[in-house]
Length: 320
Image (cartoon, rainbow, N blue to C red):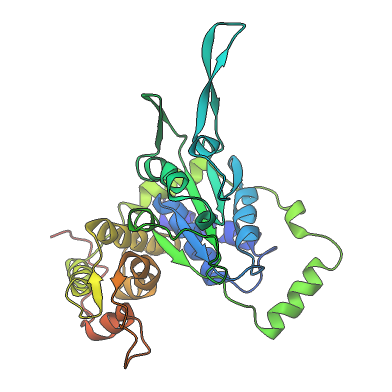
């Protein structure tokens, strides 16, 4: 695997998804980045903006198993992970695997389930394993959770706890299409749903190969210091009560490496950090209730403007 091959595979994957999702190139690329980085993504937006459609298009574009869970208040943890059922004929317990035993899991409207059910995803998202009745079962790699939630309808919902939010590498928003994009959308869907015609364009092995290769992408010492300075600033900002955790630091580093690799570069740039930091860090901080007073910017945006950007030769392939 090399940067040209990684770039080719991701471009084919992105082009395939664009047959269904129109005008969201940046979101598509960041979702693919999250998948390759080995993390999970939270899509938060109003209903009908294409969150579920994006998840299904990604699943159809890769030769991976896909399952969907509609999260509701009466959903139980065993409905997600599975359970042991007693077989009277054989006089023994038989394990019935839940939908979490898959490659791509769509957790639709995740905030409609109770905290007890939400917590059933904590182990599998972090450890890629599920423990039931004392027995631990390993999930097949890659394992990728795409969770969606609607920020408008909050009645009957349960906010995701900080521990759950911290396990999502990115939080993204689809947003509304432009007028031109919406006209193209009508043309694309007027006769049939293009999702039904999508075929896989890459394999799980290719995704895992890019993941391993991306770990070799060079990050100059000045960019590492720049990244850490941003994270450290979140722990000192007057509007932030809880700053970014070390898990967030590593998540930003890993996504920058993947983002550089799929952009046909074998080294990271400060622009990679600035591009990814908002969607990797914003959902990881807790803000004071009055943070918006006198300011229209999110504290992470303020920090990115304030922290000096390094200007060295970032392609210098020596790790100090």
